[in-house]
Amino acid sequence: METRILGKTGMEVPIVGMGTWKTFDVRGTAAKRNARAVVDAALMAGVHFFDSSPMYGEAERVLGEALQGRRRSALIATKVWAYSVSEGHTQVNRALTFFDNFIDLYQIHNLVLWPEHLNMLEQLRDAGRVRSIGATHYASSAFGELRQVMLTNRITAIQIPYNPIQREVEKEILPLAADLGLGVVVMRPFAEGALMRHKPSESDLAPLKSFGVTTWAQALIKWILSDTRCHVTIPATSNAGRIIENAAAGEPPWFGPQERALVARLATRA
Ligand SMILES: NC(=O)c1ccc[n+]([C@@H]2O[C@H](COP(=O)([O-])OP(=O)(O)OC[C@H]3O[C@@H](n4cnc5c(N)ncnc54)[C@H](OP(=O)(O)O)[C@@H]3O)[C@@H](O)[C@H]2O)c1
Image 1 (cartoon, rainbow, N blue to C red):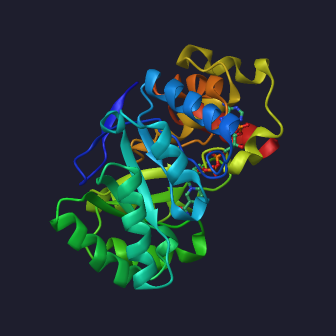
Image 2 (cartoon, rainbow, N blue to C red):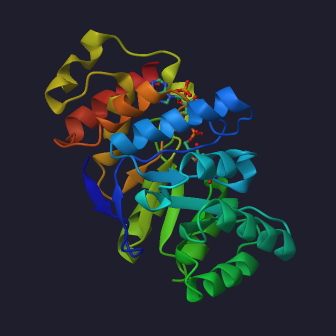
């Protein structure tokens, strides 16, 4: 698995990580055993960057349990998503108990109450509990505000959606992130699974075979990571086998403009 430096965070990250929205919001022994199997497969495949949030129900807790005894083999990117300062503190204290008192990348989820939470996260960073601070938003209508936060120079990474049917970040966000040297984490590589509903055929994908791509999921992951302004993407899955499939796309050779155009055509046709 190729690694990249996540911009000014200075962290060396595997370029394929994993999200936990829905897939890790689970209860019960069998579901938790499955989550652990997904994490086992991830670590074996070099996928050791995990994204979570208190917005995802049980996900932080389930991820923390699956990493018990091996927390330091992982990089944890989680979030504060709170409409009051006191709820923000409660969320942080909870996350610190799940992840051995340290968070690698603490992000402000959807920019909720960002001026207040930024102060709190800076204090935690100064106290050695947090390595880096970031901000996320899923909606292009919030990109103006995201720009404002980026320009404070108080965050070192952003998390944004980017895939062949959601390309708004190409206009301003990716160029600004590159100018400022910010780390870029890409959410929703499969558009929440929507891009998986109509998969192109094997013959459609044939021109991508020499790039090590044999599945549609790999084509989409490689489409993102071939833009080297993006440092890590975090597909979510509840299926250990798919982790291995997704991780395999984290190797060069990278697509050129022709291959990226082909994937974009196939995605919009679907
Ligand atoms: N505002 C924010 O900060 C924000 C917003 C959205 C998302 N995120 C983060 O980004 C992560 C990723 O986004 P997402 O979960 O919305 O969507 P996604 O990663 O684009 O898609 C997830 C879906 O893709 C399927 N999938 C995964 N690998 C596959 C494969 N190889 N072949 C076929 N299907 C596959 C999964 O189903 P199976 O489980 O069946 O494999 C799952 O339903 C989230 O989990 C979360 O951590 C952050």
